[in-house]
Image (cartoon, rainbow, N blue to C red):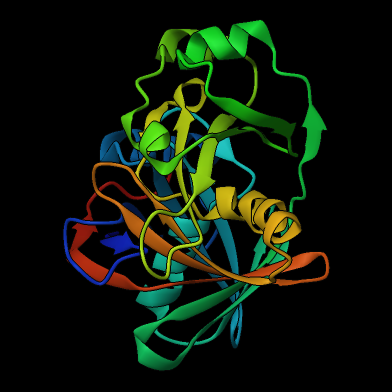
Length: 261
């Protein structure tokens, strides 16, 4: 039995930019150990496993090279791109409705993860290697740190080993945008989940949307994740949900010759 698999660059319309995700299309549920082995073999930030339910309904799970995660934006975007149609994904974070939109964009209905203000822990500041901190907050999965400028975000060189010991899924670092049409910039570090720096993180923007909406008074925002690959995420806050928008491009299609077992 062979299994189709694709690699998609998400939150970009240019190959080799944005965040690459593998999308594995299964006919039926596969063993966890097999999926984790495939994700380790792909060695990307996330590998998505899509299983059809009925009509436009699918089960969707996400694995890093080392762990299964509860929420992933870029691999959901990649999965919708590969399916090429509106989809309702049943996931560990509930049902996520996704659909193609104008201009080659895809919109995804995700939970808004409003952060709560927290004290600036000395260990966190040492790990980041900066004192240019305006605010610290905690969310369902991650820590969020606001720095004083976009340049401070871009130039940050954290101690990844120290970040790994903090116990959160990851650390979002953000600041106001510094270019036309960009409301905020960010970076995302998750060494404890097997990802030193994620190129573009949809789930982090579930936190960034309510955080920056509170600061700007606006519910429609555009973020740029300032990693080496870079990518753009649109956000529209609607109550306790956030509509994430992104584009995607398929880099390659292939076949797995190791069947689920």
